[in-house]
Image (cartoon, rainbow, N blue to C red; front, side, top):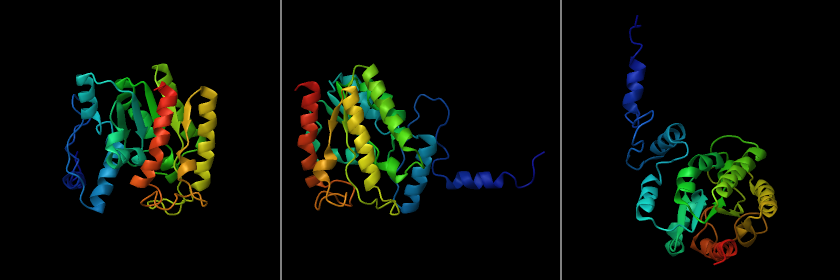
Length: 256
């Protein structure tokens, strides 16, 4: 027997949830189109929705990936990463030509990148993948994790790449003395520790290691003046300092 009034909270929740009508389960097209959130509360609602309904954000590049597949365009290098990679194409669109493809997504942690690695890297059949990850794991964007877990997620991405004949470029985490969205964190020591692991892991496995941190860091472990807009995200000047390192790493990896 239905208890009187029992369904009311569910109906109210559905009415207030802008994503309540989204498809669930296994469907042909799981990527609905929603308006861009316009307020802080709307962004938070969207973020929580994404974490529960599209954790890896597979929908973000689904159409672009399908277009690449349809055209048969050659992909030389996929740049896999978070907002630092995501914003790079806006600062320097010319870099992402001649087979270089940007697949960064702002805010993502290594488990989210791992979820979409097949769709956004393997399925594009690149010659190499440039992985820059770890900033948001340290910031705690998807909760707590051990350093070993973060390292394991990165190692799994490289294992998948190697199993598919894709060469690996491992990038250092860029410097940060603080995170504006997570002000209690003091990330500089953990960034240095994870970068030391990345460098050693790359050497042990024959991968290319590209050290953006050494070029961008100031004495306090944060970004040099003028290189970041908020202490984390590079400015055009910061990306300009990174570009020759990226190109040298690609040449070193692919031989051209």
